[in-house]
Every structure is written in C-alpha cells, then in structure tokens.
Length: 279
Image (cartoon, rainbow, N blue to C red; front, side):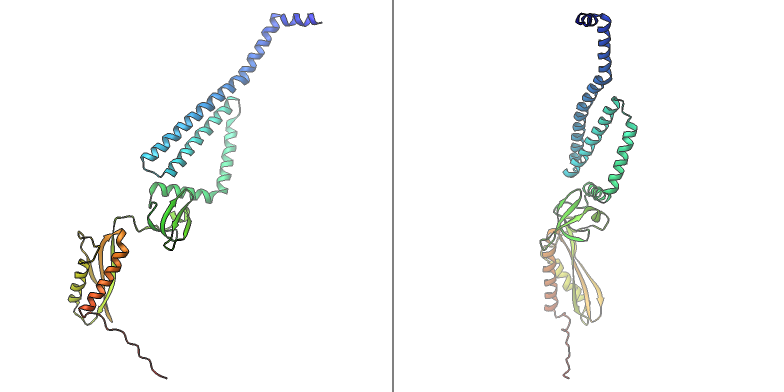
C-alpha cells in the first residue's frame, strides 16, 4: 500500500494537477489578498499626503488651524474609504450594495446627529468667513463679551464680569453678530443738555471747543456737534473719533468735559425743583 501511494505521488500527472490547484487557489485568493494589501498601503500613503496638502493649503489661505485639521481629516478618511471599497471589489464583493448600505447608515447617523452636524457646519463657516477672531469684543448668540476660543462645535465668550459662556455655533450663525473691535477706529458720542432759553450758537461753539480739545480724539477726523431735541432743555449730541481701545476712556472724559463747560459758561439747564405739600 505505501508503494502504491508513492507511485501515485510520483506520477507526473498528479504533480501537475496539484500545481494547477495551488496556482488556481493563489489566483483566486492569494493574488487578490496581495493586491488588497498593496492598495491599503498605497492608499494610506496617498491619504496622508493629501491630508498634508489640505492642511498646507489652509495655512496658506490663513484659515484657522482647527479648520485645516478638520478638512485634512475628512480628505484622509474619504480616500481611505475609497481604497477599502476597491479592496473589497478585488475579492469579488458586490460593492454597489455595500456602498448603498454605507449610504443608508450615513443618512441614519446624519439624522440622529443633525443638531451636532449643524453646529459643525456653522463652526466651519465661522472659521472660513471669520466675522470675529479670538480677542474681539462681540455680541453673538445673545451673549456679549470677549471671544476666548472658536471650535467646530461652539464658541467660548468671556463676559465683562468674568463669566465663561459656551455658545453653540449654530446659535451664532443664525443670529446677528456685532463685532465692536473689528476696526481700529470708533465714533464716540455723548448727549449733553443745556438751558432751553440760552443762545443755541453759543452752546454749539462751547461744545465744539470741548470736542476739539477732547483727550484721545483723532486729530485727522473732525468732531461733530448737533442739536437733537428742544423742549424743557436743549439736547446736544457731541461726537469724536478715537482708537477702539480708548472708547470707554474717551467717552467718560468727553462727557465730564462737556457738562463742565456748559456749567462754566452759564448754559446749564435749571435744576428741577419738586414741591412737596404737607397733608
């Protein structure tokens, strides 16, 4: 019996059949596996290279570093997903149905996370269009303060009384944004009351002299003095231009100087008197 087995093994026809079976198995399973491994390695290299290009492009465009990393990660995983689908197709897997299943899963996840995804989309818009930057004093999402951080999901605002407010980006994009420090110069105005029976032109000249001498005023921009109302008193609007960083200080000094000048010129309105009857 052993001699019979040895004779069968030594038969050239049997050897050829074994070799043919081995080659067939390699062509059916081994070669696709090798192709899949090569595709995965090359795909990972290309995905990393493309992600780096996207981040560099964002840096050249002076976009926020968070946005650059986010877009780079999206490009990387999109390429990797395409490579995985190609690997599956090399094994004979019907990728059409697989892609349809992935699409359905993606839609389900998107519906479940639509609130979070809307905040991410809003964060991307904030980082691209940059209506404000870190350090700006803004009113956004119903909150007022200094911007401390801008992320994909939310924006952190520190209020003047030192509170930390985390505002969802969706609430910011869907509302009005006021950036008080967007420009280097601001117009400061105050309201001053004078005696209704006084000389209007004298009142104007007095307030204009104060505005021209206001500390912190920008000399290359003319001040403004305008009569806004007449009644029990004359209401004057006095305005000057100054640096944005000096707004509060200039407004305070201008208001004090205007009222002092009105009083010294004898143009102040009479002090209201309240009569109290004894019952």
